[in-house]
Length: 210
Image 1 (tube, rainbow, N blue to C red):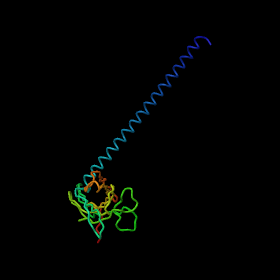
Image 2: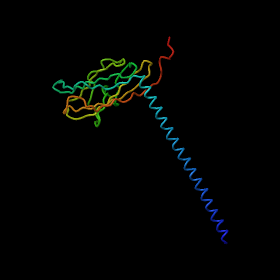
Image 3: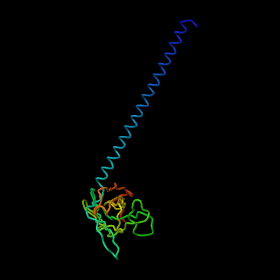
Image 4: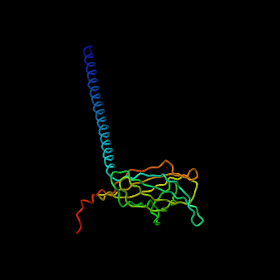
């Protein structure tokens, strides 16, 4: 093969390599643009989701744990029990009706409204039920929990169910923590989860039954 043919072959190889690199770079650029567009779309969807939730929360009942009362001991039949006073304040922008506790376990017992972290059996029981089953905006609902006196630190979970004025049904879960051996007050480590709508039906639009 003479020198001219070698030069032509080399030029062809270089040209082919350039075309391949150009195609590869173009493909990489397109993939990168596609990736960025996906990320941007996901961010927009998340922003819409959070905005929708924030807007929804501003229009529905929303309860927050208020644990500013002291835990105390009550003697009954020579047995010492801890009484835990709990309050729920409606911080939402709408009133709540039919507020009630939800069973946390499938036990046959009717008083299984509380679940204690790390324990299989029930150790916390309802002592005094809600002082009212409705809450206007800013209203507080009070109740209390009883357990046998102990010196351990516990996380206790419970759940409530309620309706808004349109008849939609919500559930909301809470957690509180305490250790009576250390102090007769609740720990600051507690949570009030966001309400979950379990029946999104506006019953104000239902036909009147005659």
